[in-house]
Length: 391
Image (cartoon, rainbow, N blue to C red; front, side, top):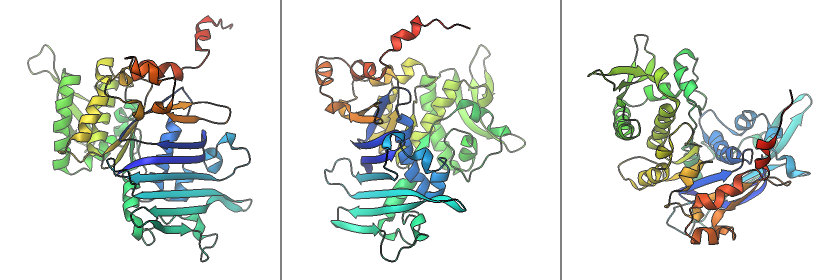
């Protein structure tokens, strides 16, 4: 099952957004156009559904509803997210989940959010199996979604499990290097690698060894001077990544994550996220710190992983990118690329296959990168090199 459509109203950059999704989506746009905020809508659903999560926690972790609500929304005060789910090869969807919420409280009453509407539609049963609020609801019960409660999500627990398995990873190498000297918190979601090594340490040993075997196969090609990447613990029980660095000495020398390059750590994190995922994978600019030769192989690598039956790999990947090398892959169709563009009324999002001026460019033999990258640059960026800054 994959996400087949997402509709956002008043969410961060997006005053209004309706877009279909595919098994592999490349999300592109200028800086500050809302690529990360688009991904965060899906993380938000994950944060509601996850253990120790919930609606109020998900909103608080984002600074409250005033930080979530779109500045371009004018008089509209509520925020809504609607997603449709189904199997990729089937036209008929399976589920639709809708959540609409708004601010409540203030003064001596704690600021929170309340549910305006929560609905679950089953396409198989051809009816809503949840419609809130109902006549038994009060202000207190409307602070919690049925999605987050095991006693109330029984009829759509498949949705709950799907949202829980959404994974976002954007490894920041310095956080991985400093993890041994940082107080970790496995009770909170870690998106940036601070708890990356602790997470690996808690894995089943057989599964961990299987992952490292596959990662080593890829590293031998992408970083040939590193061999035998392993997971080890030092005398204090602190987990580390360790590999043999090949050089003029016959036996080489051992290095740990503190000595790995930024690109190597990013690549390991990227491979681990793909292998460990059981659902949707959200990847933020996987090209950062990597050589263009490696970057150009990312789309094909993901596609091969999706087709593989030997892994638990999830069936959908959403990727934000600025990379010409990624988008130059001839296997990427215009249907797989979403273009974000800033306007005075918030960010607009369109599927590239729906943009008429792009069709003749692609049909002439140019790559998706040639067609869309020029549309993502600031309109007057050429003036930057002409600036003279006085100090």
